[in-house]
Length: 182
Length: 283
Ligand SMILES: [Zn+2]
Ligand SMILES: [Zn+2]
Image 1 (tube, rainbow over the protein chains, first blue to last red):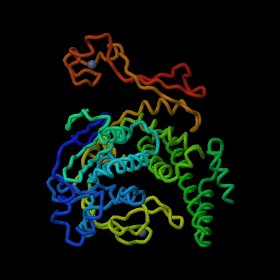
Image 2: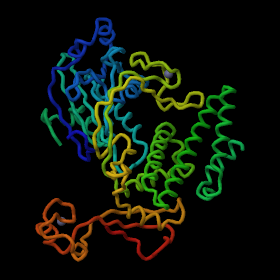
Image 3: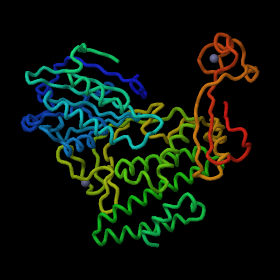
Image 4: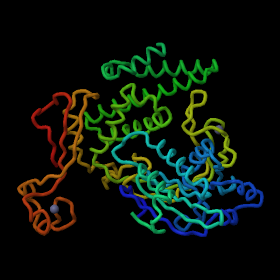
């Protein structure tokens, strides 16, 4: 069941073939747009199916999220979104999870991206309410040779930074298996 | 009424809430804002807009308190939801106001009050949105070339939001943590089709009847405690256990010295109204 608020962290890391060139070659990306997207180091990506309905779709918060990334981009982070204006469609879900969807990011800017997203989530928590919001988010980190790993996070907003941060800092966590579940 | 007068009235809400005239404060703020916009003083208009929202938050909280006093619980619930949404807008965009105008008290109290309500499930729709417009410039939203107006930002004294023009409802669901909490699941009377309120509000009632004033402080702690079996003599051994574990009574709490039920302990800052010695609520 994907619609419940979570107290515990669900985190997994898996190999994926969905790197930058996979997304740049999706059928809904035209030649002009592809050239534009090649300059980016962080790509907000859609989901292509929602309960049997063909996408691409983005979560409700995408406009706000991308605006935050654009206005706070730093240290080589060039954010963009993997869609044409005419095909930008949103699914607004019926629960109060903070659904950020997915991003693909180069390994070099991944730590900066994780920091920024952490800041974004922190901004969304406006009070110490009884129940903390749940964040749902995917981040695919692409090495220079095109090899990619996808991290999926679903859990309390406050644990996001630590969980993703630990994964991105291999010096401390070098012995972690590639697939883990806490 | 000057802006300073308004700020004083809003700041002293704890003592003046029953005598201040909110419509007058509201129209004073609107007039001051209109003036500021005409004079091109956008910053002043923004500040006035924030104070309009602060007035809304205070009024919602006071209204909900009064409604709970008179037993209009669902109405109070909706007004609390509005207070929560307005607070969320104000404090994510202008955290500097968190410490003034009793907002700290309201911000802490609203979710605690909500947690005492018996509502657990809500009707919530899912949408597919194809086109949205900016409320400020009225242009359709372009994700690649944004108009520059941010949702929740204040432009010439107006809060920017999105107007959805092409939308499809994909379905509705009953969920525990909806995107908005207005749609409580009620039963309806099959004969009159009228809403039937099947909920038990005794916890809210217990608390509110003991608070003399809206800004009297209180806190609560929820634990579980075993209540004597004599209270549940109407439940058969083979029926479901009153602790709501889903098991049979005889295989659950009947094996122990009582039925495990929520127990709420309230602490009041001032001497509570009514039976002062009974500051515990058990259901
Ligand atoms: Zn605009
Ligand atoms: Zn039991």
